[in-house]
Image (tube, rainbow, N blue to C red; front, side, top):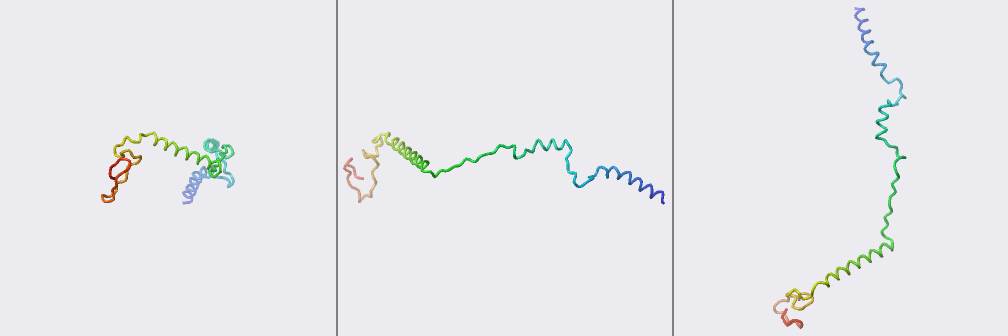
Amino acid sequence: MQKSCLGFFICLLAICTPLLTTAQTTLGDKSLPEEQAKVQSKHHRPTKDRPVKLKKVNVRHTPRYEYYARVEKVAKEKQRIMRKMDEPQYTNPLYFGHKRPPKRHEVHKMRYCKECGIRH
């Protein structure tokens, strides 16, 4: 029985010895192998190497900005009016010579128009 127990412990020691030698030897040893360090350095860039991105200040409440905004608004309105003025005035027969179509009043409130002589 002693021989079998001794043989068992020797076999167990022979199996566990290589496992114990590959285990971590100290608590402070946290260095990576060279291959892993190279792979990690490809993906990791320190923050000092990155270019500094400056945020552009976007101030829109200055007097100069408001002035140009008003000028653009007036110019757009003027262009709209000019486009409207380019259209011929009397092409639509419903207008009967009026600048704008006449209002349609109720039958008992209709009166003769000075421009076209028709009751509106």
